[in-house]
View: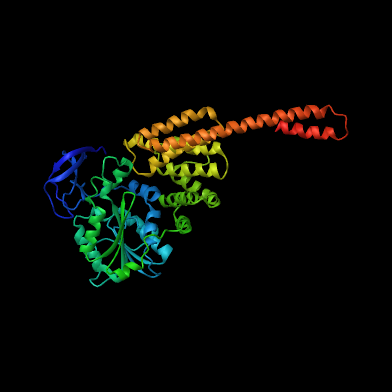
Length: 484
């Protein structure tokens, strides 16, 4: 997607407030399903960002949902919202637009909530089968009895798809119990500006899928109009909200609560053990276990999970992680391998102290990321460019420990990644400084070793000439130092 930023006006109806004329035209972009470009405007009344066209009914394929399950489903973000609710075990939960159902499953496994999902998609069919979840088609208004209520209602990245968001929030309010909590996330309209990197802007806009994006103030106003007290905040390019029918119900929530890594690892281990061999779920759970444990510095846990990850990737993609170069021989370069090889590289570098193995994993990760860009002409998800850049950068750090001559080429590769939109010049400069420090440390260490060996050689020559009994044994000890 290429955005052409424009300073102008357009007549596009805002589904949030109804204004349809004299909107601020921000940008246009070409779309394959119509002759005219899509217009991206900012509403002059409510500040929402509105996309002028939505694609015909969803055409997401089995491969798209495999990708979601393997890599892009942000289960840590989902769990990070659920942990803020504070509902007890046994609470009734409704996940609206639940997709595959990770939200429901996390709630049941981690907190003991009893979950129901609403979603008519292929992903819901997969979730029902893979996770054994109660996911139903239908809407909030027709899927349940009129008096049915829930203690927790969750809508993750749903509101931006809804043609009538005000009616949707009113229905949510009616389905909440008196002490129930509604939690939701949606892209932030405030992120739509020319200086925002496309790796963030592309998924936020999702031209063809999203109807509109709200501002923080706009979301607060809509929740209030629906009869809900709320706490709304911004995380990156995402609006997050906790809401309830009363302030008393809202007080039991904790917006600053974070999910422990141990909970995420427990979930990944639980679901990984029950996943079918060669399934996208088996790869997704094993790779996330690696990612979460390495990020937490739990290297022993990461190493313990490696055999399961290796087998899952071998069964599904025909790639042997013991041989990182085998990734490069596979025609379908799945972007999940960008993440997997990056974290295996970090594990090899920081836990195994094996910079050569680390460099091989980083090279494989970066190559897959670059190949993804070559296929699509852009990065299809935010993780791929992040870990491609970091892999190039860490490969240079690893090479500085055993192959100094290869370092300049690795740094040039890192700079090329920045020109593709992976990383940025400031971060690249920071890594160059780290590489220079590593090279300087190696140079000083080498000089110190040379001085020590020269001193040992002098001592050996002196001791070897001595006639004093026992000195010969000391000379042999010094000779062994020289051999080492």
